[in-house]
Length: 365
Image (tube, rainbow, N blue to C red; front, top):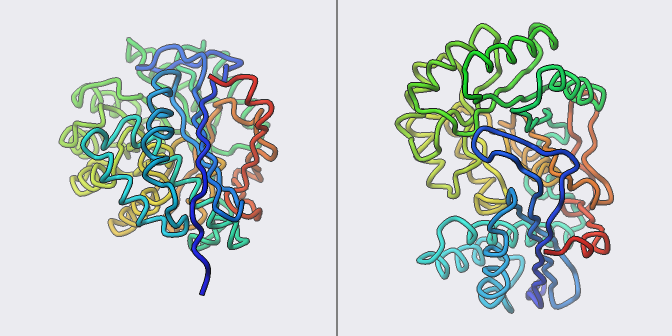
C-alpha cells in the first residue's frame, strides 16, 4: 500500500510582473503589470508541487492572504494525493466568505500545485496522468491590443505568425462599432480567407449591441466572438448565440462548475472557456471539459497556457489553447513549445514549469 503523501508545508508568494508593452482591452483599460500568485506545496518526504494564479494588477494581496492564513491551516497534514477530498474541504470551509473572487483564485493555485505534485510523484507528465489524449494542441495568439493602430496591429500579427502561430485573436469593443469593423476587415484581408481569426469584446456590450456587432462581423468569418456581454447574463448569452449568427466563446470570468452548467445548459456558449487559475483549478477545469463533451461542445481555454496545454491534451473535445502575453516566459525555464501552429504538451513530470525563484524574488510584491 502506498504511503500517505502528507502535506508538510505551503509557501505562498505574490509577485508583480511589469509588462514590456502596455496592454489594452474594452473593460480593463490599460494593463501595465500582472500579479502572479504562487504556492509551493511540499509533502512530508520533501517532494514539491507548484501552482499559480494571477490578476491583471489588483487584488492579489487578498488571494495571498487566503492562501497564507486560511488554506494553509485547512490543508496542513492532509493527504496531498486525495485532491478531490481536500478541494471539497477547502471549498466548504471558505464557502460563506468565499465561493469566488480571491478565495477561488487561491484554491485554484493550491489545486494546481497538488496535481503537479501528484504527477511528479508518479513520474508522469500531467497530461498523461489526466488521461492522455493528444499532446499536440491547436494554439492561437491572444492579442490584448484594442488601442493599437491598425498598422501596429498587423505588425504584431506578423510577429505572431513568425513565432509559429496559425490562429490569431484580436480585441474588439471600441467606442464606435465602425472602427471595430474596419480593423476586423483589415485583419481578414491581411490573413486571407479561411485563416482562423477570433474576436474578443471583453464583456463590452449589452445583448442587443452584441447581436448587432456579431451580424456586422459575420462577413469576415470569425471563428468565434468571445465574451460579448457580462458573464452573469445567461439569458443574454443565449440570445447572442441564437440571434447573432456567430459562435460564442465565454467562461474566463466564471468561477464555478455550476456557473458553467447554467451557461452551457441555457445554450449560451459554443466554446466553453475555463481558466484553471480562477475556476477552481485543474480539478474543476477537467469537470468543465467533460461537461462540455457531454453537450458535444469543444472546450477552449484562458490564461496559464503552460499548464493548460496539459489539460486540453488530456481531453478529446479540446479546440484551441490560448497563448497569452503575460510576461511570464521571462521567469520560467522552458516556455511553451510551438510547432506548425500546435502547442506541444511536454513530457517532463508534472506540469513541467520551473520558475526562476531568484529572479522572481526581485519583483516580490
